Image (cartoon, rainbow, N blue to C red):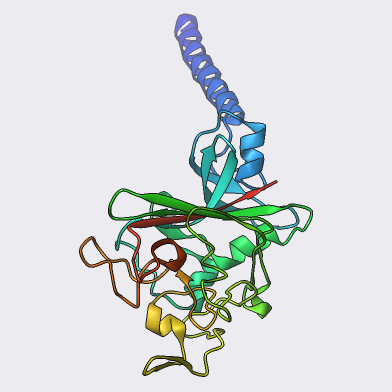
Length: 266
C-alpha cells in the first residue's frame, strides 16, 4: 500500500511540474494581439530586423488598439492604408465602410479613415504619404508628400499634404487649375463633399464624382487622382471614367494594375 501511494503521489507531482512549466512558458510568450507600438515606424525603430506583416498598434492618446499591415523597408516602417491588386475586394462602398475600413490586411484593403485620422492627428509627429503605382506593362512610379494628415470626421476627413516628390507627378494638386484635391473632404456616393453643383465635362453634368468614378476619394471637381475606383484588367484598362487613376503619370484615363498608399512618421 505504501509503495502504491508513492507511485500515485509521484505521478501527481510529475503532472504538477509539467503544468507549472507550461504556465511559465505561457507567461513568457507575448500575446498575439498585444500592442507592439504606436505605428509601424516606431516598431521598425525599436526592432530593426522586424519583417513586413500584420502588427497591433495603439497611437498615442488613443484608447483602442487596432491591426495594421507594416511594410518594413530600409528607410523605415510604413503603415499601409490602401492596397489594390485586383477586383477581389470591391471599393465601391459607402461612407461607413470607408470610415471603418474593409478587406484583408494581408491582401487588398482600406484601413479606415478614422484609423488614419487618429494616427496623424498628433502634430508632434510629421507624416509622409507614399503612393506606389504599378502599370500593366511592368512599369512603376511613386509620389511622396510630406506633412500628411487627415482632419476629423466633422470636417469629412479633410486631406492635407505638403511638398511633393517622385516620378508619378503631383496628381493630388492636379494638372489643371481649380481641381486641387489638397484641402478637400472625402466623398462617397452617400456623403458628397466634391464641390460639383454640377461640374461640366463637355456635354456631361456631374453632381457626384464618386458616383461617376466609383469608390470614395478626396474629390475636387472630380480631379486628377482616384485610386479607389473600379479595377480593370489588362486590355480593358484605358479610357474608363472609373478606374485606378493617377492622371499626371499616364496623362490619360489609364487604370493602374496595382496601387499602394502608406504613411511613415518621422
